[in-house]
Length: 264
Ligand SMILES: [Zn+2]
Image (tube, rainbow, N blue to C red; front, side, top):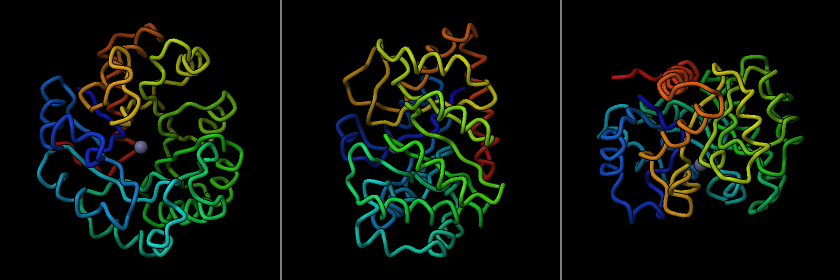
């Protein structure tokens, strides 16, 4: 059994592969038994995510504003309390995010990204739900904000990890999880593969981040949750483990981190 810890089933770019229900079925047929579909815009996606997760077993969602969207008026309107309230009203909402800082694209002003990130962290601490972190070219500020807001109870996963040794060490020191996507399977990501080798098995998750970043041998194509085992198999080879061992560990880690989940 595998769990895809991060995908976007309602993303416009995934529609050519099928409806969310069809993508979930395709994944289940190849042994992907659970997945979390991640929110990027609170103002638009919650009803859709609620419908997808209500219609399917072992499919859950988050609530949050992607850093790309953090400057939008509709997203800025959601306070920490609003986010907390939403988590109570959406029974399949098991985490908060994705939120964080993206200084590579800078699609939103940095101060708006930071303010949104802080609200998400505060909501995590108030609810006990884990944070799904997106960080790109912003490692130091990301860690600084997380440390400033953390009261010692913050649970988090650094999603689609593509950072430095320093970031991996910072996350592991705080007890946070690290999730690997198809990027780790790409030929030239040798440094990332070295990091994957040393991340302890009890802190590792796997994800597709579908529709983006399909793992080898699907690189360049539209990604889907059914492909997550390719990333898992690659990590198993890196760490001299069996595919089964990686599947078991990453699924257990997901259930430990996202502890609101009740696996059916
Ligand atoms: Zn994502």
